[in-house]
Image (cartoon, rainbow, N blue to C red; front, side, top):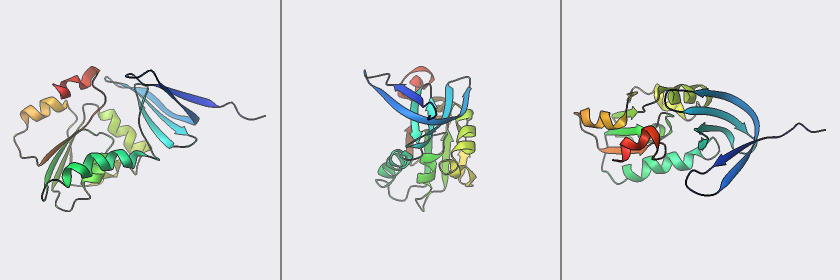
Length: 172
């Protein structure tokens, strides 16, 4: 007799569809002041980061998302030096930004430091940018950071959750 299968059902908040993922194991479940977290070991996609019931990325396909967010805008800028990432607490976009040889500083401004803690523990290949001295972490609201920032940024990349709840201020 085979083991019972665990299924994770993701309900799209904007469309009447559902995605179903076979899961081998629940690695972590928790809650911060901002959101609920889960790290799941899936059958086909490797580890998955889930925030408030929505898949943020999987080990198998995270590169497509993080590479596009970082490289498309930075290739349009001659010799980018300073980049601000709003959100991005998993470190994936920063990892890609750091591949550009002219980068001097990368500010990661994520309101929820728990995202970074989880990424460091469960997604080391995604969060590896945090060990780079050019990365500056600012655990705070991105809208407030931008209002108070007095430096120069060549690019501002928004890697946030959907336009609901605490992320609304990033889109106004």
